[in-house]
Length: 343
Image 1 (tube, rainbow, N blue to C red):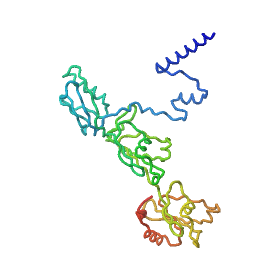
Image 2: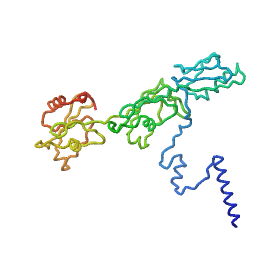
Image 3: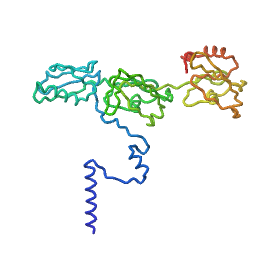
Image 4: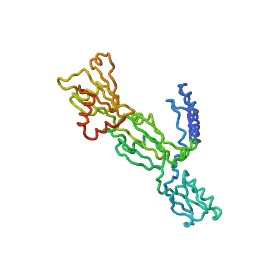
């Protein structure tokens, strides 16, 4: 009996091993029918459609690259060549230029071999991109190490952001923007639209919350020429009869009462009932004023208003024009530009 059991285990082991060797995992039964149904529909357990565009991550030659072509036993047939603005190179013994952009090194080598078969017997060609400069990306703004990055593979937004050291904890706000410029070095992947056609390309902007990117909820596939801009903190300004005048960072939605707390409260003997929010109009340089009664906010009669970027909280009885003039005189360190910005 024991021998029979051992033989059964041996057979099961062989069967499972063969399944893995031939690339077929043994089937399993999912205890959760909903999970099985979701996966059968081509989605993972979170309901996210898997990325199908990662079919080829090999480097593809671009317009600013330098490539080296070597023909075995015929060194005068090859050499080092800069890719022309037309995306071509000219080889010494071939009459016509060869289009090289968007081809892998192996694809180009195979094509050159075919073209040499009219003058050589069994040519063997190797191609190497010795300077890969076409796939450039830039990260600017409130990051630790802003700059340009030249990469030879596909990359997602989060990884590119990590190359720049991530958001600057002292300066970065809550959002970033990806500017897609329509670079001519973008090559068409199987199943993708022809994003490399720059004749009809327009600037496209994608905006994400930094937190969503860092948590992997948003992780865009990057394209050569993309520029990532990590935005600085938005600011509001609290001036007048408060203990700490100046700017307050909008790290998250901020209300009028919270801004006064950030300014360390009112000065002694100051009137604390009427507070104004001075806001620049979106379509011109004029200012509009909103007055709030703190007693009504504290009693719940009026909702505590949320502030917008560049709002000025005026804890003062001065008229708006006089207040702005005095405020403008007191500002230093570039803050006067506030009066010329449109939120």
